[in-house]
Image (tube, rainbow, N blue to C red):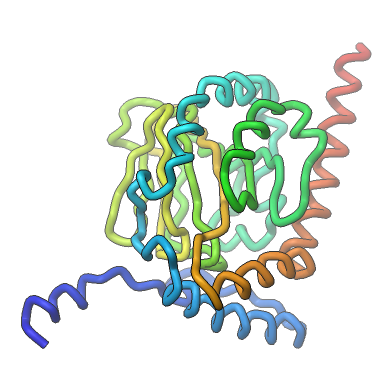
Amino acid sequence: MSTAAQTETANRPVQRFGTEGIKPLERPSLVTRIFMRIVAFVEKLNLKYSAVGNPPIYDKSVFPWAREIEAEWRVIRAELERVLTRKDDLPGFHEIASDVSTISQDRGWKTFLLAGYGFRSENNIRLCPETWRICQKIPGLITVMFSILEPGKHLPPHRGPYNGVLRLHLGLIVPEPREQLGIRVENEIYRWKEGEAVIFDDAYEHEAWNRTPFTRVVLFVDFVKPTRQPARFLNWLLLHLAVFTPFIREGMDNQKAWEKKFYREAEALRNR
């Protein structure tokens, strides 16, 4: 192998199973351990049979529908602003997905979930019907939520749980100076911009920060990574089985409990 080829190979992005400094997820049941071994096998297939390559951050031209999402960003932002009238009542992400506590244990990272892994929040969708309509343009839609990063919040380096999905961030509220906030995916840094989408693979190590004195909000979407057979079928199967895992079931229960309290309080305020 030539020196240039060796250098190119050494600099190629690598997906790792686990992140130094972050406690690994521990699920003691035998069924879950077997499931995670299957996940590791399918992840290798997802890399080998990707139909869109495996870069940390994608060129948006690979996904033509991204422009359609960007074109309606102000519609989404208008619905977000209604949600933010009760920002202090929104849950910390770790309060919904307890495994997020490995990277965030305070309410500096909040979420407002519309759907995820087979679960749909009918209450939240009714509050943001246009956002939901717009997101139906995304093939293989899995998760839709608003991701709210408070001033001074830093999400340390970590990787997502599974590489069979890709992630979109659409900038909705991006405070200045933009140089003080951003996301690093592997060796690439992206700084959010209002009305602009970025698509990346969260199975690469990544971290995010907001060092401004203001709140940053993006539309956060996960969708199925385009792959060829046999990865396509196995990826589809795993994503449909995910709803039965403890992580997803626990998150659904936490979301339902939070919604019940949130909308009960809303009703009480209306009846005053």
